Amino acid sequence: MTSETTLDTAELLGSTRLFSTLPEDALRHIAAVAVPRAFPSGTAIFHVGDPGEACYVIRSGHARAIGEHPDGRQITLGNFGPGDIFGEFSLFDAETRSATVEALDDVETLAILGSDLKAQVVANPELGLALASALARRLRIANQRIERRSFQTVQGRVAAAIRELVDRARAEGAGPGPTKIVATQAEIAQLAGTSRESASRFLAELSRAGVVQQGRGRMVVIDPPALEGWVW
Ligand code: CMP
Figure (tube, protein in one colour):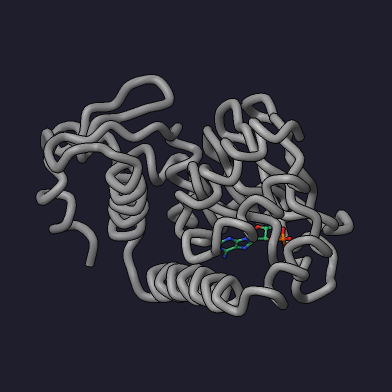
C-alpha cells in the first residue's frame, strides 16, 4: 500500500473496537500488510472447510456466517458489520473454516494474514486481550441463541432475532425510535433457527399489531419496546 493509504487504513483500524488499544506504529504495521478485498452482494467470501489463511476486517457493508444442513436448510451463526472481524477462528485453532461467510450487500474488507495477526498479538498483548474479549462476546451470543432455541417459542425466537438486528442497526448509528433493519424474511428465519413459513406467519402478526412494517428485503420496527413483550 502507498504510505497515504497506509495512514488511512491505520486510522480505520484504530477506530475499530478490536484494534483501538494498539499503538500507532503497530496500527501502521498492520495497515501496511493488510490487503483490500471487495466482495459483491450475495457472493461467498469463503466456504466451510476451506483452508483459513487470513481474517477480514469489514470497512463497509455486512456479511454473515452460515451453518448449512446437507438438505439445504441454513442458519445464521453470526452477523458482521463495519469494524467487525471474521475468519479468525481458523487462524487460532489451525483448523479449516468453521462456516461459510456470505456478503449480504457489497462488502469492502481488509484481509490480514494469520501470520501477520499472530505476530502483532505476540508484540502487543493488549491485542490478544481484545481478541479474547471479542471471542467471549461471540460465545455469549451463541449461548443465548442455544438457550432460545432450546427453551423459547418460535415467536420468541423471531422477536429476539429482530431485536438483535435492531441492536446492530443502533450500534451502526440508528436512533432510538422506529428502526429500519435490512433483512429478508428468510434471513430473519435463519437467524431465529426456524422455517421461513413460521417466521412469515409471525411477522404478519407483528405487522397487524403495528409493531413492524414490512417491505421488500427490509422492515421498519415501528415499536421496539412492544417487540420486547414477545421475546421471552
Ligand atoms: P473461521 O472459522 O475462520 O471462518 C468462519 C468464521 O465465521 C469464523 O472464523 C468466525 O469468524 C465466524 N463465526 C463462526 N461461528 C460464529 C459464531 N457463532 N458467532 C460469530 N461468528 C462466528
